[in-house]
Length: 250
Image (cartoon, rainbow, N blue to C red; front, side, top):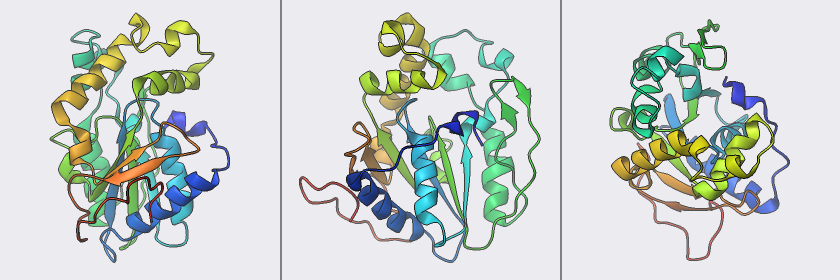
């Protein structure tokens, strides 16, 4: 699991718990009786990893659940920075998508041994994790950035875009690494430029809200809200969005 998974989320508010229960109801219905893969996408600091942990707890006992993060499939530092440290190279060079597909998603679907990580980005070194075999009705929840890229979007049976503005996501994400000062909180500060520009480039190119199955506004962690967007869940009929003003999945 990602090194960023150490944060333990606080107990959910009543409104958040309603969203989580409803999202779990939708996810558990994706490809029943088959292995299914669900992606949690969003910018850095949106709350994807925490959402993955929360969702897994609400799915417990309903279907077998495995979790992974794209952070376990980084490329080595020398490859990530080989073409500079721009927003575009952040988007293009950060991750080993071939390994994500061949070591994680494909073997999971085939009922073969899979691994949830191949690289530790903080140590800048490969990792060896014990292979896992999923049962025939298992779910795999994958969180991370850039998951609706054209070469990845068809890997997922359903997906969530975790929507948070940069003004909230940047300080929230940087808080994982220590105290957040003025520079760390400012999306326009040069310290954040590579990451913010890379993710703006992604959003502009891909329009993930139109590719995702569900869009969850996670700006206010206590009062998230949602709407159905984009392609329907595989194996399910497309469903209308919630009534105007509704919060939480019903």
